[in-house]
Every structure is written in structure tokens, then in C-alpha cells.
Image (cartoon, rainbow, N blue to C red):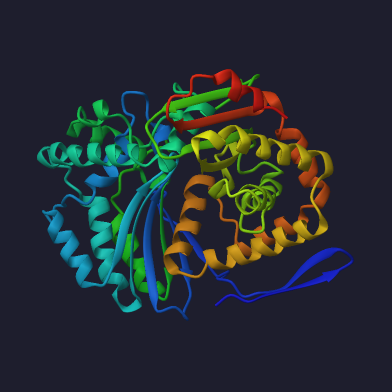
Length: 445
């Protein structure tokens, strides 16, 4: 399906062939709903995905958890399919893989089926999105399920760490710093009116993208979308509270918890997803902690056996983002591991990266890009989320071109700019750490 051929001429990379789902079509209906069709005739599956540009960052403190709870409620019955089991049986009979997910700035619902079943699957998906009833009895019952989901993640420190880190990074009073699942108190207090109010504000046609990818009849699919969504609620896109960095010193948050490992996440603020250094940051993360050949993997796991997994990553929102390193170690090895990490970060700012590391990071990006486009559900998610959150779609070939515009010297420059003491945030989950001064002492470049 994917075939990259890249030639080098005068240090400029020219993509001579990128056979990669570029013939997508975008339509905007009269009510503002956006439709993205990504046909790929060689596939045996098709995916229908509905993405709304909303999530937990569109909630106030008292609403926190509502966007995620609402996602659950869409599967609890519609006017045409009154019970959860009616929806589940019909989708299962189609051989569907289906689910939904909520982020801080996006919420999506999808079904992936054999190509010849896509219109039937869309009938169910569109129905639950347009005609869900949100019955009070189901809301009360589902609140118990979500409380158990909160409890489940509380028992998963490697997952819980992200919430502790983002709360530290963005602050507990900013929506980006709050947990997507919300609090147990909020979850058990929501009533039907809360869901309807949120729907009317955020689930409007202008804020919604319907994407179909894979092998499907384009004319019939588009006609069905126009018919099913013609009466969707209208209104302006919801607004959110912007984040402005105010940090000027090291920030440390320790969540005391009885665990077999100490889990840590070290991160720094960056620009958002339109920042000029976004691709340089992604390459830097790959070189430092993106795989078995990365610097931190070699120093921390292979040379010293201090951790099973050590990762570097980036994440971006429209106006902000972060670069972070995450791992888990024996309690007594925390300080030693932190010292190694900061030594490597300082070194990369001082000396930059090698030619071999730079070329490996670029070629690795190509591979990951290819893998991310192998399935109809991955493609639908990629295209729909970009359109819903960014109001544009950056096609894979354009992403690759942007990576190849990054120079080796850019990585060193970016490292110098972001790896500074007043930009450090460190979140830790583990047993009682009494000497915070000792930890703070090593959190410096």
C-alpha cells in the first residue's frame, strides 16, 4: 500500500514517489458539518469515524468529566435502538470493531467493518450519534462504571503518571491540567440536563467531522451522510481557555503511593502544533528515547539495567505542548537515573547529535508514518482529528517534507532553548519521599 522512494540531490530531499492515500476529498454541508472521504480500493475494510472538536479542556471545574461521561452515554440506547444490547448485537453481527475515545480537545466514535458492510455500520453509528436518548436511569447506572474506571487507572501508576504530570505542567485550575475522567464527585452528580447543555454547546455541526476511509462506495456514503446529518444541531464552535506559561523555576510533584517501582515523568514546555520546531522536537524525542537504539535506552537500560522501559515523547495542543521523558525504576535508583537523564540532555544541548543519529531519526520517521497509515481506522482517526482540531489536514507526504526540512543544527538549537532549569517539571509516583530537596538538587542542567 505504501511505497517510499527518496532521492538526494544537493542536500535537498525530493520525494519522487509517495503512493499514499492522497486522493482524499473534503465536503462541507450547508449546516457546517465537514465530511472527509479517503478512498483506498486495495483495502478489504472500511472505517466510519465521527470526530467532534471537544474534550475535557472545554469543561469548567464543575463539568470536569462530562465530555468523557457523554461519550459513554452515546452507546446506551437511541430512539431506534432503545437498548445497549441492540447496538452491540447489530454491530457485532457486522463483524465490527467499534469504540470511542475522549481526549482533551477531541472526542471520536468509530466502527471498522468489512468493506461491503460499511453502509450498514454507518446506519448504526450515525443513529447513536444523532438519536441517543441519554435516559436518566442509564446515566445513574453508568456513573458507577466510570467510578470503577477511575479506580482502575488509580491502580495503574504508569498511566496515572500522565495525569499527575499534566496537572503539574498546566496547573490544577486550567482545563489542560485536569483529568479527562473527572472526579468521582462530579461523575456521580451529573444529571441529564448537564449532558443536554454540553451537547448543545459543543456537539454542533460546525464542530464535527465525519470521515470514511478504506474501500467504500463514495456516492452512496456521501448521500447517506447528507441524509442522516441534515438536521444536526447548529451553532458556533465552542471556545476554550488559552494556556500561558508562567513557570520560572523547577516544579516537582510527588504522589505518594505504595508501588513496586518509582514512576517518573520529566518534561518541559514547548510551542504548540503549529510551532516551527514541532518536527525538530519529534526528532529529538526519537534520538533521546524513541527506541532500542536511542541514547537513554542505551545508557539506562542496556548499560546499567536500571529500567525496563524509558521513553521520550512530545505532545501538542494549538497554543502549547511539551517534551517529556518517562520511566519506572527501583525506588533506590531514582536519583541515579535522573542524573543520567540530565547528563544526556545537557550533552545534546552542548554537542548536538551525530550524523548517524540524525539520519536514523529521519528514516525512522518515514517508517512510523508508513505504519500509521496501514489500516483504515488509523487513517480515519488521523484525518478526522486533524480536521476537527486544526481545521486542516497535513497529508503524509507533506509531513515527510517538513521532517526533511529540519537540519541537524536545529536539534541542538532546540535543545538549548528548552532544556533550561526554569522550564523543568518532574512528576513522581512512588512510596513516601521525604527528602524533596535531594530530588530537586538533581533536576537541573
